[in-house]
Length: 377
Ligand SMILES: *Cc1c(COP(=O)(O)O)cnc(C)c1O
Image 1: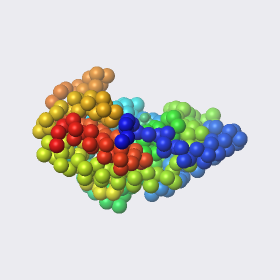
Image 2: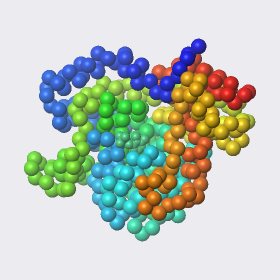
Image 3: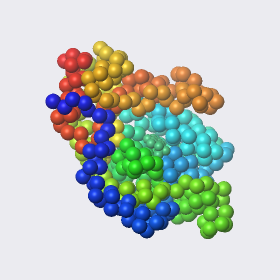
Image 4: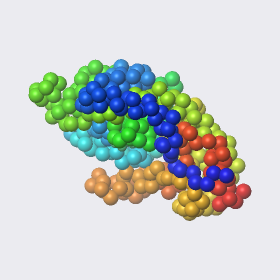
């Protein structure tokens, strides 16, 4: 019987890659090309290609990928960007750092993805961007996104930080819009050994501007054509990512299979008000997180369930406990409780169960068994 089930297990994932990783990092040390070295170029082109997009520009984090990516698309002060209220705070930070005005909208309760009808009501003459978040590893439907963007004359900028090689309607995450941001934070589906991010785009002008913005705004050394910053992907991180990228598809499919296993085992819990977040993209959902809703019908409240699972050695999480509009630091945006009901309800109901590519059947059985013990069959 497995005792403790971690929330993610990176050690186990990296163990079989140990010598490949060491060799790749060692090669950087030997070349000494620590800033924008060979490994960065290689990773930029191979990751963008894997996503079906022409250009990849490595940056220092997913947050900076959003901030600089929007700037590279020509977005700045006076421009409104529509984004969901239920996302990781970095989406909002990215928009603010680009100097643009964030306009939050609600999500669908079933999928936790942005509600485009709500977004339609939020469009003004200043709106320039729709910024969908492919939350938990499931893409917002590309066809609906494109219709929405075309109908309102907006650009699509995807937050694909949880959607590395996610698929829906034949599109990869990050290939739907003008540009997209990725994060390689260690626990993402493709993670490095520190911080990292990337913008991908088919637009050569946006790509060139990105390369300049992340590198002091200097397309050529000491010639500063833009107000840029220092936000490059480290060569050593790229060396790690080059080793891991070929395994990503396999890991994603392992996660999807683990999720199917959870779905099956948890289905009797529907009558107890425990419902997984809906998957509308089949095997295209890459399950960065496996999230259930502990609804009103449940005999047990989400926080108590979380505590009891923790006490039983099953580590779970909440993504995210406070929607962006209710975060203390952003009260100046002028939102209040009640503005985004679905986001608020979800923040009370959601629970993320252990999910990582190497989670095995016995562990999944144990998680669900423990839930049955706590809730009762
Ligand atoms: C992780 C994440 C980010 C930010 O990435 P960092 O690399 O941590 O800056 C942005 N958006 C979403 C949805 C994320 O999950």
